Length: 259
Image (cartoon, rainbow, N blue to C red):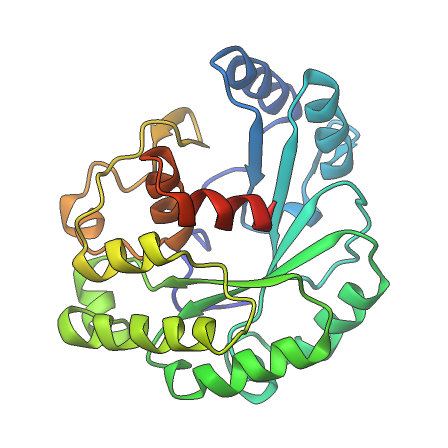
């Protein structure tokens, strides 16, 4: 994998150690967290001190975490039954393979073999925006995914200007996503979140979201200290959570359907 928008590759950051992960989970549980989302890098290849990600999930369940999701590229077997896998599918088969090293068929094979719930995740950039509608139709036609979520490219301003969407371009791509939702495709996006993303007026940071990266627990996102990135945030799940916390019925319903 060498996805151009990835902020985790080749950074020199080390994988978290098993003991630190377990301590962080216990601390997060004590702070009131009951939902856990595991990201990477690639979580399905993580291992340390004889433990694999499967063991971390079991430990989190034993602590009392109720909802557990794992972001993955899908190139390893999805062999943890009691989680939601969020698998990156960056467009139609042709577009995805051009971005993600010809992995489309392998991903679908792994999804077909799992008993876990699987949601597709599309990171929308100029590289795949032209095929958005075709991609959603193709993903839905597989009948392997329970939903389709998306992010707008969220990166430093120069990267977003070159590869992502700002201003009216951003609004236009959001309108296209919403139109697909209105057509009945299983897009994970509430009316409240859609409107907030278009107006870009949702309250951030979301204090109820915490992210462990390296030696720091960030509030909401590790870009919290970078206003230029935060202003153009495209993480739809964060917006959805923010709207649910404000009591917006459509966002609450959307999150309940997705979990």
